[in-house]
Image (cartoon, rainbow, N blue to C red):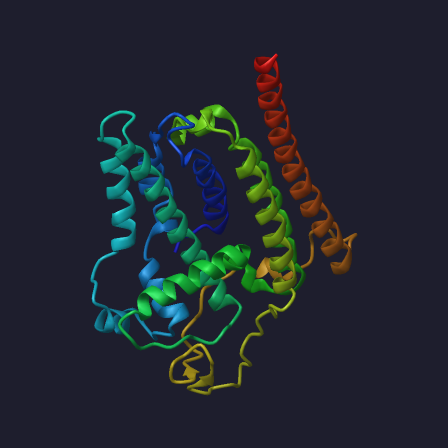
Length: 320
């Protein structure tokens, strides 16, 4: 499918900025700008089929048909709830708490859905064993597990991570640089006002500290996780086995003649950054992400301290 892990990561970092506006008493109320259109059209694939993905990748359901039989829902309700929540928040009374919290709640749900889609793919690509497939709350548990995995190993949900080896590490480093750049762009007032009207007036200091720390953490975890992804080996021409062992299948086997998700064979070539060894790239990638994370966190702390100094100065001036 056309799921884009890069778009999903950029969406999470951009949408997370709205949480600096959680309290409407301290900040102007927020409402959806063009966010409903962005989520419904541009990010359609990134917020779709989270239940199906978690069922097949986390719980080990063997097929879409099997998911349809065991599932109590025949529609993509998480995506619909996100879009309906955005639409309802947009038509509420301007500046009301209902509009404000409806917007924040819908954005929170959309972030969880995107993270769950990333996490379910990461679970598959890291070849982890499926969790228990039974129980009434199994779908909710699988979504929670997928979202947690998505927040810890987001870059492992990129389709091209299957190339493994040096190409997988390069994928994490290059995409993290793009995400870092877009993270800075998302701090511009024009961008925030385009997505969520009113969020540009909120104090982003604490958000920058949290997101900067999370960015550094995820890049480091994904770089070392990518080292464990082995490049796929094609089946020998003389291998006509009907079944091969596969721990991700509930029956323990899969049909080798059925293709998995396709990937670009060029990714297996180490043509990029030939002058650098894999260890050098890891060191450079870790240093860059740490420096960026420290820079964002320090900037946020300095803004918080500056704001506190102004408050103290105002109170001291008032007492005099």
